[in-house]
Length: 276
Length: 314
Image 1 (spheres, each protein chain N blue to C red):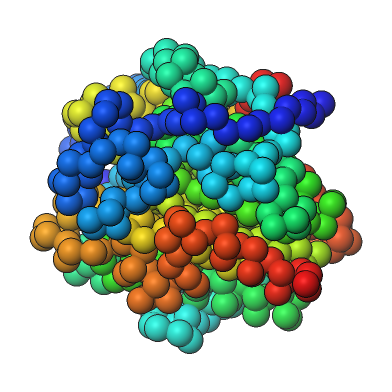
Image 2: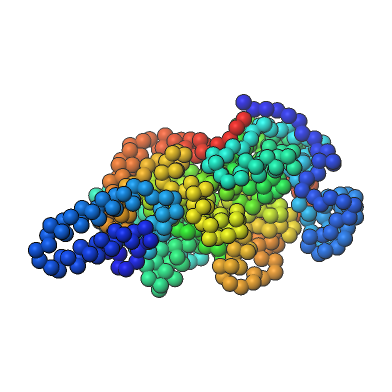
């Protein structure tokens, strides 16, 4: 059963962002005027740091009329392992984010081209992927395949959700398997990586895009930098695992500033879908 | 067999066995030996029928546990190891090659830990780099080309967390293996032999049948990693092991794995031969069933298997 709901981004629902009139840049420490930052789609004017924004912000930013016809909006996580404090954590994440879990998806248009669009929320338990995120990604891929519409996924995630144990790990297999079928049908998939996209999500659908775009300065990798530092016993070089580093090492196609994302998607889709 | 290394809960049995060895040097104590042997057997059964999750973690990591090459050497007639990913290098943490088992041709990909310090370092403690996963995929694609089924043996704490691994795309190597193995036109049978450490294990564990040794573990995160995130205290690994439900028995109940391969009482490390026989018989049974399927059906079933995985409410 698929539930339909139109989601329109409302500015008051901005997620995962510091409150107050003034905001300090996480990267360069500059004190910035909030309304000014909002106008600049949360990019620091001084150092170009891309503040983390939520799925609703990406809906507003990337989709025609800021409109997503959301599917499966009622899907909710369960606690199959009866994991310590998981129910409590879910409840508080749901209350603070007004989301059921860390990913929304549905039908949309970009530059007039119909697409299947999905976007993750880091504010929901670190964008971790459990059964709901995995299942929604799988359904988004299947829908893109059956309707032959390009798939676009905006990712941000700390990795698989520990609290759902092995079920979370299996979502890597589930989503990658669906992408193999999508590729067979030659339906395009553009993966957009935002700060941060790590571990299980990178080791599955986020790195399987025909085209992989990253926002500047986003942390991208498999193992988190702290664990690597502990393992090798030395400090990591500056810029390690940032999107610029990943571009240099051939892991992503494009580095695109948030302000240029929509335009870049339209240009790419027009070429791939052979639309004038 | 144990060579002085044993786990705390194995201790009572080991002590009895030592006593039996001592008595064997004397004459006229056959009755006493017989009695002690029966006692040791009962004790072993008692301990090993009631293992906690943490005890199974310890058995899965037992320094004497058979590793992939021990099993490969015992179950194959002719194993030819093949090296390198043809892109960057050869990763000794992954062993791959071609072999015969009971006159049947198979391809093998496996994670390999080292026994002594020198080999541990060479094998990088069983933690693969991207080139290891790419080598495994190369061999699996070759197996597909020649219509040879694939046996994958999993035993790793996880993918290696290092600078080079990240530079060369650890995430891409794992994701691409999952992507490619989905439509591979030959059967893939996976045996979780010891540790199934998260994405690093999954990269060679995306197949038709997932079999797990009785005391193996398979988890999204190590008990230590989980404990340090959850309680900021890695020493709470016992509690984390319980919370993660990472044993073969848990995963069979969750229908994430298909079958449990029994270990000799006392654990796989007490009898390599018996362990290998058990693995071989279950693996070959699964190969017989899978090779009987038409390719389309094989792949469809593999896809359906992963589609089912996940628990949610709608």
